[in-house]
Image 1 (cartoon, rainbow, N blue to C red):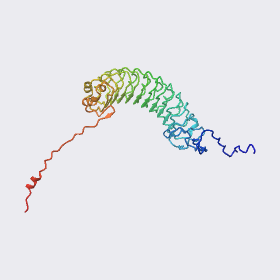
Image 2: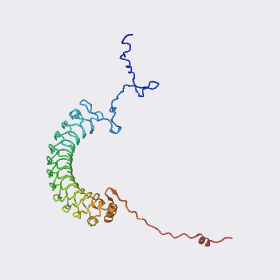
Image 3: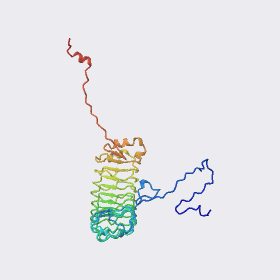
Image 4: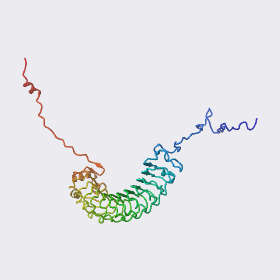
Length: 389
């Protein structure tokens, strides 16, 4: 017999090696063997066996020569390419989109902003969560109204003060230390600079139309530089290092002040804020509500995890505020000393309040009664009924 008779051919399956271990009477060793078969992976199929249905398909990668117009009309106004691993903006060939008004490139790998010069119609540009280090490439976007550069690696605000039509500007979670480069942007209504490394409030004096200023989670130690912002409606300066409210000017239309997680010990230096509706002073070492008496329009007071302890003061300072509907005192001595009686005591002190901490109060229903004459007994009715023989 030839030595090659038992060798497998290219088209045959190799013979399985005999098992030398213990087997049953039929020769089975107790192991289940499944015949291997080829698997076809179709385009768009998730080939990762570890991925769950909740995670969805892996992000699509945009190649340099791919037709971006697939799914986007060349005369359309919006383009959304979120989480697509885009690294090169020129590769998208955006010059083909003549009427582009909104471009969203969130959660990609863009390091440099490179836009064609013919995108003069662009109104909104969203570059949230990329790898951008320098503010550049916006020279021709003179009609831009909304610019979002949050969650990048930017250290300096530069080359945006020529965008005179800007209304909203976002620089959340970057590495900015100084507020600069915003001079002359008189149409700005919102600036978002939270979660940076800012130590001083400056460079905002010319933003006379500003309505919302978000400076939370920085390293600010003093309130200043806000005197000219007379249109400010919302000021968020929480999670900083501010020990006093003395630098806060009297802002006539300010409706919300968020200054939680700072180092405030008193509210007595709070200026006149005639339009204030929401005040958040949570997680400050404040032990008194003195200073809130002039806030006639106050609707919500958030003072959780402060050192407030006197229900009599709560009633004397807040009891006459007709607009007050929500209070948060969770974590204060007011709540910790007698947690079972806490809510009832707040309701007695502030009967107009409709929400205590995270729980809404149901209004007490008034029930009216109408007195109905008692029914006559059967014997009385029978006595008055004519008897028939």
